[in-house]
Image (cartoon, rainbow, N blue to C red; front, side, top):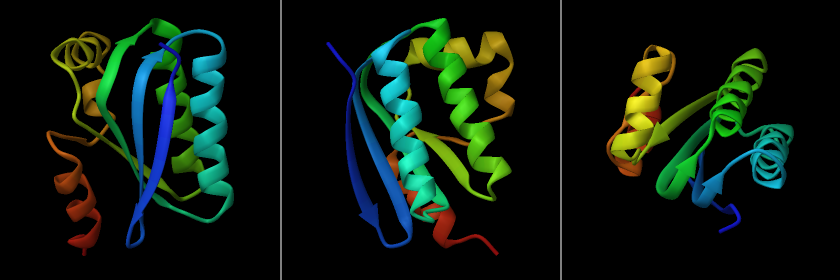
Length: 117
């Protein structure tokens, strides 16, 4: 299933609800282009909802890290929510769990932006 991205805004936070697969090719490009589009509009607080993502290959993982790095370099932030057990394991094995802020639910990730000091 091709990657689908639904964007919604909750106050200042942009939530990207992802569904499908994040793999080499069009899917990774679609994610990269969508996050860049959001950043180009000046949206600096973003949450990626992985609740409906069935599979992420190594290129997809690299894409997620690349868009996170791009966001940080532009003064923005991306938080991850609703990760599958397998995706959490991928992040653990690669050491990337220390890079990303990870939340069990989208609501918690959104709220974390609102409670920052």
